[in-house]
Length: 87
Ligand SMILES: [Zn+2]
Image (cartoon, rainbow, N blue to C red; front, side):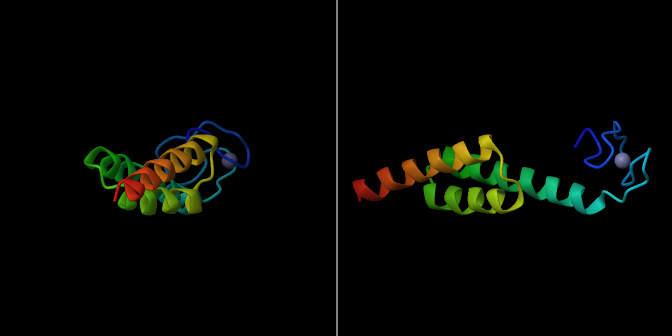
């Protein structure tokens, strides 16, 4: 998170916005969890474990719905369906 979602001030490393003093710690936690599950999804895809990747990307979408995460979900779902079809 580079900018405060409330006042658009550029953020430093602190948990409070330097301009409006909003506590951004929960948003920062969500951002860290999102990155963690994105990395898990990519690692599982790399390992050929599509079901694990799908579970991880679904966690990502619960935390942060973006066009990129949505596309990653569709891609992972397609790979999973193909792997199930192969048996
Ligand atoms: Zn702010």
